[in-house]
Structures are given as C-alpha cells and as structure tokens.
Length: 70
Image (cartoon, rainbow, N blue to C red; front, side, top):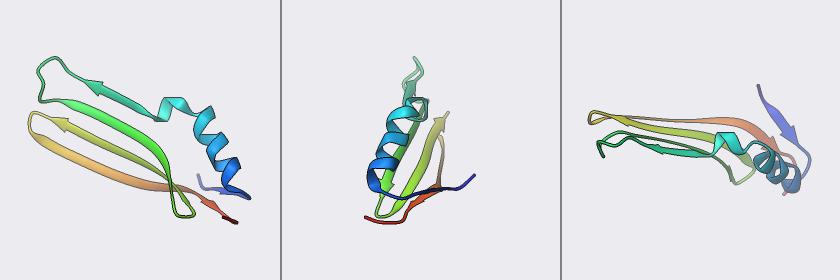
C-alpha cells in the first residue's frame, strides 16, 4: 500500500488517526523490547520497527507514503 498526500497536514492527520502504529513494549526481563513509529522524513512517510529478543536485534523501515508539496 502506498499513499500519496497532497500536503504535509494531510500526512500529519494520517499519523494522528493511526496511533496504533506508534507503540513501545518492554518485557519484564529488561533485554526484550519492541518499538514502532510512524514519522515524516523529508517528503516521505516512514513506518519503522525495532525489536530485540534475547540479544538479537531486528530493525526495518518502510516508506508508506509521499507528500507532493512541502
């Protein structure tokens, strides 16, 4: 799914409406966590995830949208 926004305000409203994409979860052990965020980088809307489980870290970032005018 790729979204094209006409203005930056449309992208900011999308971020506000999709609060479930911004999360932070820590396990009780202290070494395991999961973090997700949705943010604007230049004229792109980026969704990123970072997960650590038993010392193994996985990170990914996906461009899910573009802003036509800044």
